[in-house]
Length: 425
Picture 1 (cartoon, rainbow, N blue to C red):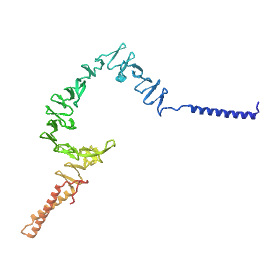
Picture 2 (picture 1 turned 30 degrees about the horizontal axis):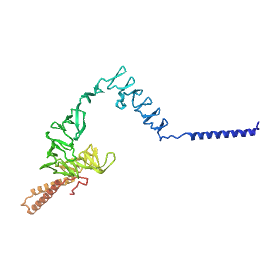
Picture 3 (picture 1 turned 90 degrees about the vertical axis):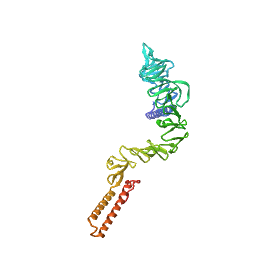
Picture 4 (picture 1 turned 180 degrees about the horizontal axis):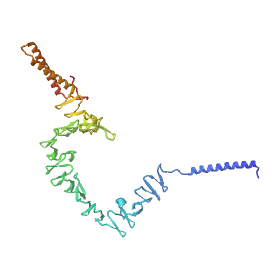
């Protein structure tokens, strides 16, 4: 038996050895945990493949899309569909899951069927409406000569595209006869693209519903006004903006290579707009992207404003390119389509007159009337010299008044903007 002093030393030694053993074991345990081979946020499936748990699911080592191809926490095979997210049914031979409407799929003795087009009787799938081997919903489709079409549609054997090319084999297509037609083995809009009982190709126009003309260059039929189209030696031209001389199409009003009708349109540096419109050179889209170069757009200044190369829609009146606030509407009025400030201006016969100038005209008119009264009250025979002086005064005032009034009515005064001049008096 060891003395107490030796016994205490051995106890301290045991504690140290035990502590060292535990620390060493933990160190070995930590270093033995393998790091995951998958990127952040991904997990390992079946010890082999990484997957994203936010969009995918792993079951029994198989990865599938989640939630579309998961049923009761299990991945579906390609020939399986989930019924009410509880049970699985098998797709018949040669079928594919994406040909079914997911929410109308039911199970008939373990086999999938579409309850919208099929029925299950005593574990057997039946097809009440069959069209060339395809089941269909008679409330939505009907069988037309062996082809399924929406209810009310007709069938057309199409041989040609509207560009004029021919299909390798004729194609059966359904069409709605309320706004389309099947003519000369083509489908087209009716009546806008039908001419003398035939469908028009995209590069043709109809003239007087009798003959066709060919659209020149890279033009398209919807670039033309149908009622104004005529034929010039077989080529279409727009009578509203072009002329035909000796079989040659001419352009009397040319705007950067485009013809236009000067009676209703005008050209702004290569952009054609209506007569009541102006051009705004847009620098930015509604999303903040920049146009390069700026995009010219026509706008109507009566209800739109072009400010800082952007268009604004004004619910109230527009004056000098700015939208008026509600409180300004009574003060700012229109005179022959031009804005004026009613506090300092007046509108007479379509002309804007500064009120202070109008007041000056009134003062001169009163002075002229008084001079005429003074002249009438004085006799020529009493004092010829004084009468002549009064006559000269009337003549001078009359001349100044006529000159001022003519100048006042010949100018259009527009206030407070660069393009508005104020005549000093």
